[in-house]
Each structure stands twice: as C-alpha cells, then as structure tokens.
Length: 569
Ligand SMILES: Nc1ncnc2c1ncn2[C@@H]1O[C@H](COP(=O)(O)OP(=O)(O)OP(=O)(O)O)[C@@H](O)[C@H]1O
Image 1 (cartoon, rainbow, N blue to C red):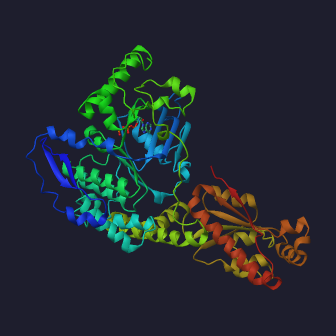
Image 2 (image 1 turned 30 degrees about the vertical axis):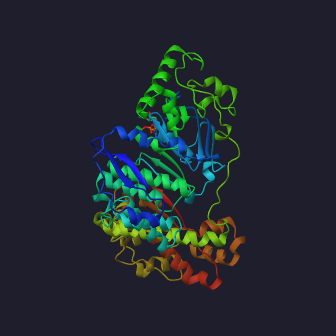
Image 3 (image 1 turned 180 degrees about the horizontal axis):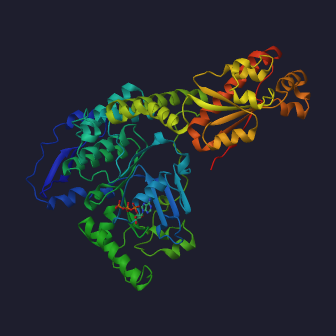
C-alpha cells in the first residue's frame, strides 16, 4: 500500500506502509521517495479519516466532567487546568488531542494514565478506574523522555521488555522490528550520547516494545523528520487497523492529525470539539486542517467574549451527518450541556459517547503462582539495570565504594572511638578510703578481690583509663569541672552484698537491694566524643564482671547499670 506524505520542501512523498512485523522487510527502502509532485496532491491523499472505521461501539476511554487544578501550598484558588473536560476515545481509533501549549493536554493524559487524580469527574479506561489498569496494557511515551543515561538503547528496551514480563526471544524480535521502524541506528550507544530526535525515537520504541492495547503518546513526532513521521503514522494506522490497538496522540503538527480517526480540540481546559478530521473539514469548508482548527478556536474565542451563543445563532459551519458536539451529548448532564460553549452540529451517532465499555483482560490471573515469576523477573531486571548503571558511572561507583568508610569516619568523629588514656575517677563507697590512703595514691593492687567493685576495676585496661580515687562525689565533680578527669564511677557502699542479694532474690529483691547493686557513671557531657566511648566501655566491663563472676552461674540477664551525667559549664 502506498502512503503519501509531505517532505520538508512541501513536496509529496510516497512510501509503502506496513501493518505487521512480517511486512517490515518490504519497506526498508524508505529513502527512495518521490519528490516530484507539488503539495496540491496532498490534501486529497491525506483526507482518509472518514473512510476509517474505528470500533465506535466500544469507547475504550471516557472522561466525564473532569476538573483538575494544580494546587500549591498556600494558594487557595489555583486555575483549573481541566475545566469540565469530556472526552470519548473509541476502540481501535487514533485519537489526536490538539490544543495550544498549556491547554492541558499532558494533564489530561496523565489523569487518564492514573498518574494524577482528578479533583472532580470520572475517567474510565477499559471500563475501569485508571488505577486498576495493568501496566502491560498501556504504552506511554511522555514528553519528558524516560531514558536511563547510562544504558544503551538496546539495554533500555530489554529492561522495559523484562519489566513487562516478555520472554527474551519476543523482546529481541520486537527490538529488531522497532530498530528498523524508527531508524534507531545507534542502538549500542548510551542514551546520554543520543541526539534529541534519537532520544525521542528511543522513547517511542519503549512505549511500543510490549505491544500494548492502548498507546498514549505525548508529542512523539517532535524533532522527527517528515519521512519518519509519516512512517510512524502509518505504523499507528496499521496497529489500529489490524491489531485492535487504540492510540491517543498529542501533536502540534496539525496537518498530520488528518491521519487520525478522531481529533479532540482542547482550549482552556475544555474539549471544544471532537470528531473525525474529515468531518471538521467539511463543516468548516476548509482544505487544510490547520485552517479548520483555527476556525474552531476563533469561534470559541468570539463566543467567550460575547457570551454563550446557541448553536443556531451564527453557526456558519456546515452541518455534517456524523458531526457531533462534544458537550451536547445525550449522555451528558444538564450542567454539562449548559457549560457547552462550542456546538457545531447535532450528534447523530449515540454509540460514540457512552455505552458499555469492554474490559481488556490483564495478563495473568493475579494468583500468587503467576505473580511470583513476574516479580522475580522484575526484581532481576531492576537489579541488572542498577548494576549496569552503577558500573558505567565511575563517580557513582567510587562514591558507593567509599561510602562505608565515610560513614565510619563520621561516626568516629561524632561519637568518638575507643577511649585511650582517659582520666577516670572512682568513688568507691565499699572501700571507705580515708584521707591518708587517698593522699598516698591508693593503688589498685591494694583493692581486695572480695569486693566486686575491685574485680571490676581490675578489668579496666590500663591503656584505656588512668584511675583516680576520690572519697566523695563532690570531690569527683570538682575534678570533672577542672578537667582533671573526664568521668567518674560511683560504687555504692555494700555493693558486693547487694549484688549477691539481688542474684539470690532476683525479681523479689527489695528496692534497697536494687539501688545498692547499681553503679553510676557520671560524665562530662561537654566532651561528648570521649564520654560516649567511656559509657560503652564502662558498660562492657560491668557486664563482664557481673556476667563472668556471678550471673552466668544463675542464668540471669544483666542491665543493672544506670548512668547519670555531669554538665560542666
Ligand atoms: N506539575 C504542575 N504543577 C503546576 N502546574 C502545572 C503542572 N503541570 C502543568 N501545569 C500547568 O498546567 C497547565 C497545562 O499544562 P499541560 O502540560 O497539561 O499543557 P499541554 O497542553 O500539555 O502543554 P504543551 O503542549 O506545551 O505540552 C499549564 O499552565 C502548566 O503550567
């Protein structure tokens, strides 16, 4: 089948179209185009939309009275981006959504995809809420490209194929086809090195890779040369004609929308007109779709400024048999009808706007048995993608490698490491040291092992702490204040006796016993670094002495220590 298009110089070009993967080989010579016929031939060749027969019985998407605004924090009255927006996309149709920049096309598409929620209104996709539609059934090409910088085009396509649960041979087959279709020559190049047009084509390929039932394409032909653009449209037509696919496409190239089955014109968040492009051409008496669309907008603007007019008042569009007004649907509410501003002709085909919607079956039955392999594949492909990305990005990789070292360093700087040569005070009420003993620097060797406090202190490694004995807590606090010691430990009088009682009576021990079997660590919190380490160390020693010497025998748990802090100003 010969398809006719227009080249950059306004000349007619011809090329063969194809409708399936098998036929792709036949159209490899897309460069062999004829440029010898002027633009006049174009209109006739393009104007095929009325011959098309999308399955009008089954709208695949219906949008009713949709309202949406982007509310930012603090702003109460954000303008409506979708303002009582209605839309009906028949099954197996190419639906071109046209409108000026900022008219709300992308917003409408993102709501249809379930990426954004409406403020009011209803959207049905495959007869259900968009949130319930399985990803496999939809191919979406966003305006912002969805490529991974450090993956090649092939790897990206493989990744998405796996995510969609395709088997490797089908993925390869699809990739081969899409490479030819979209002239993706440099498929082994990283996405970051592709030109803008190449990136768009790769993004388009991602939307097509899993052969979805519904394609939503946000300006797929931007930056694509006219011959390839024509080829893309031919392919979309073949998908709708032969493979039951439905396409919604946005474009700023109005003439190319002649190849769609339906056009929807958006303005100020409303759908102003919805019909076959051929019908619009007839209604407006235009030869170019751009002229016809312009007339619609002019009419809309004049009605906006003069107030609403009824259809009969000043409608100079020719009526068409199949023409239909977007907002005058019999299925719409009276409020919707009141809000209709642009009415071209009566709607003769009730099937287009409403009726039951068939629900496409999702792949798999949703049971754990079928979900598990899919989940495994998805996790596998995610891991593979992350691994490739990581290994190709030297900065990221080096960061990942040194991250644990940075974390350890930060922890050491913040809380301090193992204490070394810390001056540790001891107030041991068990020993009842007198002034002369303290003055002559009481030595640990004089501490008798019968006291558990002595056993404890003998476990303190000499490198970690130098012990300084004090008679009272006040003396120790003063030492902390003048920085002679960083912390001190208090052993209560009869510590050993209370410890033994506690072990014997366990949960039935009296509060005096519980109090008397605790040691206190008081620390100078102005030097957070060293005292954190001290606490850990003191606890560890306490645990060792108690556990090794006593508790192990009775199978008791430990945790008798409490700490108090001294803040030195
Ligand atoms: N995330 C957002 N937050 C706030 N405002 C937004 C956001 N996205 C879009 N808008 C605003 O909503 C309006 C419609 O944007 P939208 O992208 O839907 O238009 P569009 O018709 O797709 O435009 P274009 O043809 O240029 O892509 C614009 O005024 C835009 O600034």
